[in-house]
Amino acid sequence: MIDAVTNMFRIPDLRRRIVFTLGILAALQIGQYIPIPGVNPSLIRFGAQDSGLFNLVDLFAGGAFSQCSIFALGIMPYISASIILQLLTVTSPYLEELSKKGEEGRKKINQYTRYLTVAITAFQSFMISFSIENSAMWGANIVYSPGWSFRILCTIAMTTGVMIIMWMGELITERGIGNGISLIIFANIVARIPDVTARAFELLRMEEPTFTPLKALATFIMLVIVIAGVVYIQYGQRRVPIKRGRMVRGGRMYGAQSNSYLPIRVNTAGVIPVIFAASILMVPATFLQFLTPLAYNETFGWLYDAFETISRYLEHGGVIYTLLYVALIIFFCYFYTAITFNPKDVAENLQKYGSTIPGYSHGKRTEEYLTRILNRITLAGGIFLALVAIIPDLLTVYLGIDRSITRLLGGTSIIIIVGVALDTVNQIENHLRVRNYEGFRRRGRIRSRSGM
Image (cartoon, rainbow, N blue to C red; front, side, top):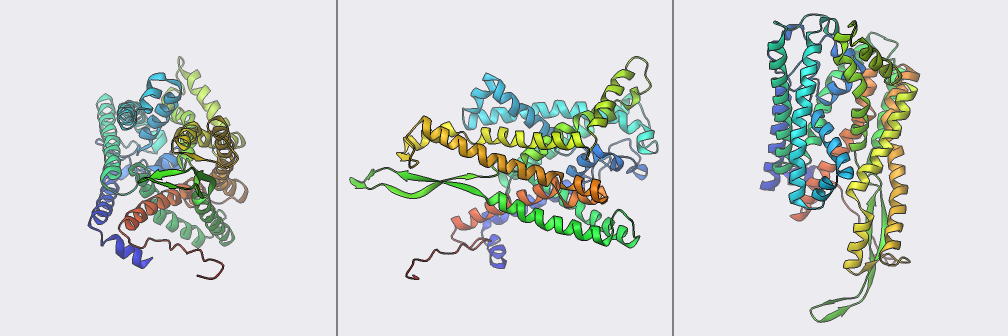
């Protein structure tokens, strides 16, 4: 491990990428403390952290929402836009055609995603400006001069903040190390760990019933099990044996080879299904918060009542919420896997390069076999992700552990932290191995029966 860390900084290109990534993430953390213009900084942090909905938004934003920062929405609008574009890619012939055009099509879809992100952010920030003016939500009037001037200024400031985050995420992906958007969420969650840890010790010191020493032990055991499980699933793969046909190279005929395989990951979708599912379930409660000023309006009061009823049934940790959460996670596992791994394309590529799966002919039978394997392991990966994601709710509902602790130290947070960390480490290892340096994980050599 020490040698691998040392080797990271011996390679100039890798060193520049790591320093650049750390610098961008540090700048984003500083930006979270810049309040929205027109807001009284001394009165903020009153109501946001008490809302089950905005807890998740605040978690992904690294605490920026509860501080009324210009980065309050974090990267969530971009994620929402990505969900919409990926869903439209399946239903829209134009977008489906773009997705098949390689790099050029991907750039075009990314541009549409940016435009949609601006629209979503402008709408959300405009509605949030009404909520910020609502003194009942925040416990005090934190706006100096409420009115249209503040709403417009708040919309512009928060939209600009999201655009900066999105731009910095793309810079990390292009010039840094790892996936920029995932790393930003990773850094925001990790930045909250010291505060949550301090709160846990404070509850233990005060002997609060929501976090006793026994419950602290249960949380720690859950944390270890979840981390081990996420690592196991993240590296888990089904290796489909492949037999390569005879090849002619340099005028010489080489015989068939059967020692290669096609790896299919158990969790092809990564942490995306968990984020997508949480984002969708936040929609009713989000509109409810925005529609608070209409609660006693004679004309539109019914709209508030309708969303209040839906939000009551989708209460965080409730039975209906949990069932929908699990179903959406499994659905997005299949959906995202279908986008990233196409059995038909893989079968065609195997045939093109003269490779076959033993016992299955080229074309349709190979495609059906790969589809059957993919469906089985995707179901296993989806069920695992769903179980891990609902563990914090189960600990809160059945053991009474403080939600602020279980939310950060388990479930969605741990999936994101471990998943992003492993992906980033893999990218660093690839850079090291290309230059013949030892990576973080030592790979053993398989010995023959003679011991050589």
